[in-house]
Length: 213
Image 1: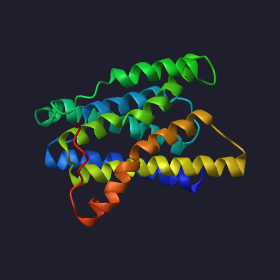
Image 2 (image 1 turned 180 degrees about the vertical axis):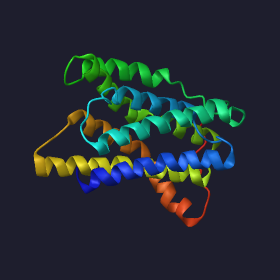
Image 3 (image 1 turned 60 degrees about the horizontal axis):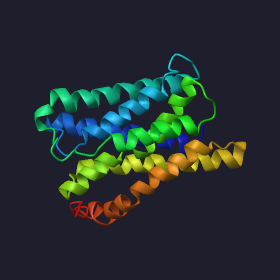
């Protein structure tokens, strides 16, 4: 554990709390990609199959919180507030992500065992799980401020985790190639968003992305 890991976890948790509070207070999931949230739920489910293996209280508590939040989010989008779900604009083809990720998980992993393959799958899938949300924003041309705050803290979480890996490499000589490469790929997807967040949202303007041709 180091400060970057802890701040990364806090940022990740804050992003999820912001999303849940947005939906609960507005009684709406408008502007939220249900497909991205489904992918994140799959990420947590396949990554935390070792939940019963005790590592530390912190580790166990965080796993339980992330799993619960993921499924509560799915419940709110597809059941509680389903009438407000914008399915017409949430049209990203998830199979374009799932099929390559599944294939890559079998080809590039540390150990050819079910748990290891599923863990690797979760790492690869997390790196692209945000794409349906970004595609939805691009399709509608704009996003609510609260949604942009959610995306900002989600991107910040990935950047802090990259700093965590750099720190661990220099202090522990530990390097997880799969996690690092996937984290870099995921962070790249946020670059344009970070620029728009700083130049527009933080200046009180509404975020908008180029409309697809």
